[in-house]
Length: 443
Image (cartoon, rainbow, N blue to C red; front, top):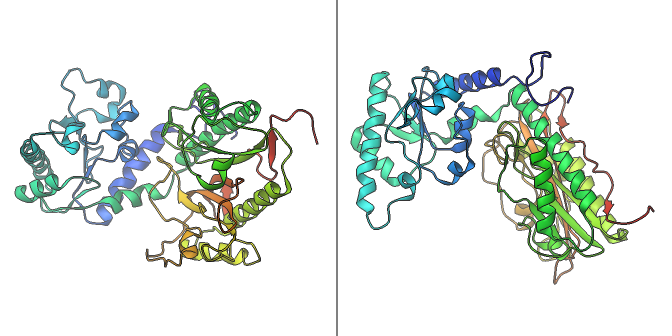
């Protein structure tokens, strides 16, 4: 990062929110036109953000009901009407002026149902369909397919009764969100810089006698101090001691960290301008690392670096996985996968997933080894890797002795972007050595 995170009047900063908002809207309309859609009903909270709409609170993610209606070539989508004028949304989001019209968009009950009165929602969905149909007719697109990203059986039936050609539209918005703009990439970089500070504070505070919960609190404070707007979850993945060897990923608990424990933490879902992190690191606490711990860490690190080297534009996600497996064809390597339950190192929890407005953005996934380990076959079609796709690359290494998992497991991860030549990593927090925390002196 050359600059600070926010736009200012005295420098041309890398992140321009107005440019990002306009480009994303243009891309959404272009994708609607590509697939011949007349409109799109959007319930997905993260896609609202993509379309320039913000509810101001993350609980909307867990109360599905409100929706946006994006009509092709008609600017920003229609959004929920505020019953209390003047609408606060129009003051904060003036680009939505004149679009706050949806009277049937309703949080919670529209998707969750109404206990004891199942027929009530049937009638409400008919009102939703009628309002959508009226706007489609007004814009002359009622004869075109209308996509929806997530909904209930009630909506499908109501749209059919209203004569709306409702179709699955998940792939449309997924395609729009898949390739990132320069502003989105800068937001992802900034989220990573904020999260590096949290890993640093965790390393300073880690010692025998603290709990996993306390360490989650240390990380959260550091993040909010530097301007993180949300912590998706809100808890992080934290697993220590025996839990680091068999239960990653998992939420933090009241477990007390002891000398010699491995400590796995994923400071994930940290949001800057909506764009998220996925950021695993593993440390050892209160003692020098054992040879076994160092070997497990080195094995995970080699797998992680090889995974990053396997990503480049112009190949498919399947080819990237095959490249990665070929680099690990050696005894104990990730390409020499033991057949379960044979003893050995297992690299499950290894994968590349898209990163963006959520910590698992839509787009291709580069699979790890779990499927091959269990003898499963890959059945999803391959997707091409393209410049400006952003991935979280994670590698986990765990050891099964034939009866139980070893208590020392490792998980490493960073995020980055596909460039013309390969893969640029956003994060700088040290990864090449196993860091010992809470240990007086040096060695």
